[in-house]
Structure formats: C-alpha cells, structure tokens
Image 1 (cartoon, rainbow, N blue to C red):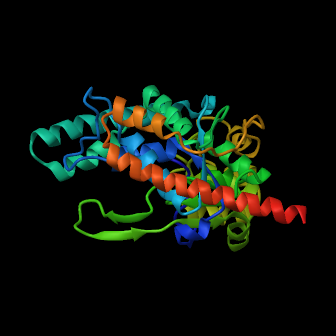
Image 2 (image 1 turned 135 degrees about the vertical axis):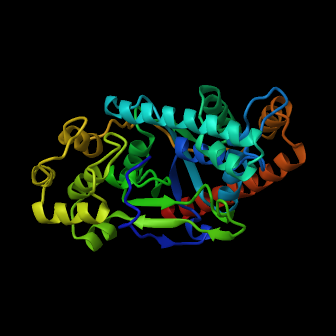
Length: 346
C-alpha cells in the first residue's frame, strides 16, 4: 500500500537521461510487483514459459534494467527481508485482497469481460519465492548489484541514499521519504508510453524526483512531523489510518499540535492497532545494515541467455539486443569511472 501522500507531495519531472551517472537504490519488491502487474496479455494472463512458470518479472527486470543502463543510470536492487511484526495486519489484508481479485479475474475471464479481467488480474499479482530467487540469479548474470535488506527494502534504500552509496531511493511508494531518503525517484519502472486503465488513451510517463528537504520546506514541517502525518493518514503498519483524516487534514493537525502525541490526543476517538510511537520508531530508527557492496560487472551473456532462453524460453534475439544495451552502458560507466579516477590523481 505505502503511505498515501500523493495529494500533498509534488515532484519534479525529469528525462531519464538527466539521471545518467547516478546510483539508484531500487526497491526490488516494488518494481517486481509492477512488472507482474503490467506485463500481461490482453486478457490479464502473465507471461509464462513452457512449463507454466510466470516470467513477467524476469522480462521487466531485463528490459527495464538494460534501458536504465543504456541511459547511464546505475541501479542497485534492494530486496525485502523479514517484515516488521507491526506489518502483520497489512500483509494479511494484502493476501485477502489478492485472493478476492483472483476470484473476480477468473469469473470475468470466463464471462468474456476481458478488459475488466485484466484489471482484476493486475490486482491479484503475487510475488512468490521462486520469482525472487530467479530475479536475484538474473541480476547476478547481468552484473547488476543487489542487496538483501534485513527488513524493509525501502528503509535500506533510504539508508543507502543517506550514506551517499546511492543518489536516491527509487520506488512508487512515498515511504522512503518517511525513512529519511534525501531523494525519492518515482516511475523508474514504468517510464515511457503507457495506456490508461479502461481507456484507449496513452500518456507518456517520466521519472519524478521528490527532494525531502524541499518537500519539508514547502509543507513547513520536520521529518518527524512528516512521519506523524503519515501515521495519521495510514501506513503499512496501521493501514486504515484515522477515519476522515486525509493528507491535508493530517498536515493541519501536525502543524497545529507539533508532535505525534499532540495530534493523536486531539483526536479523542482515534483508534490504532498498535501504539503510534511504535510505528514512528520503525520509520525513525529502521532495521538496516552497512554490510553491503555496490559494484557493477560486465554482463555474462552466456549466463543470461542460458537462464532466460534455455530455461525460460525467451527470444534469444531480443535478449541479445538487451545485453548489447547493457554492455554499452557498462562500458560507458567504466570510462567515466576511469576519467574520474584520473582527475582525482591530478
């Protein structure tokens, strides 16, 4: 779900080439779910190999990563670890929602309502263990670094951006801002021409940069107050938020009462599944690690082709074209690194 801040957060649209040379710590689960949702047939069926295994996530990972690297962007994928105990309610809600969407998808498909079926199919997407393992294996073959977070991937991505290991955290959700990421990049996985749901209308989606300090200045609040605002609206740890409190109302409350406690006390009928302070602690002091390395390598063409074409029936011609883009991006990356090293020695 992510925290619902869209009504009060505005980012700056940029061209993908403007991110050239920048390291993006990508929330892996977030983008893989996007690939599973978007990369489907006209009736909502995901891409599958001859053994019936879903491959939409692998397709998205290959072709999107190759486009990013061709543009000079340096992605590093961050995978979720063990979710915080506070997230149990949201996880259960998501499972139930996907099961309901799967039932509606199958019914709509049987009745020939294919446009509707596709919408339900997208909502039923599930990221299974074999998909995560396959994604990591593909990234290894592609020479693209990935990191296993101890807990929330967005928290680790935000931490990497704070440390300077990455220029920004990349995700569709705004949670990275609550975790303290100095910059959030949205739309990285869906940049390009996209069809609007249930309409024969196409739009061009561009990356969007949200600067944390700029946002806080515009709203006139601190990061701690942004976390309080998110809790009032609803997060993955209290998905329902406070009834009747949207982002604009929550903003007024945190500005008036200054602290999370003050805002909560002003809402005498407010109910939380857990103490609000416990939720705030997850965002302000998340479980992250310094035990990671960020290094890109030349793609192993034989490994990628063997895995995707040999095991999952991808088109070798298309895979080789993607590899050419990746190799060109990697070579340019190495040239820039060599030049930077040379100038530092001068």
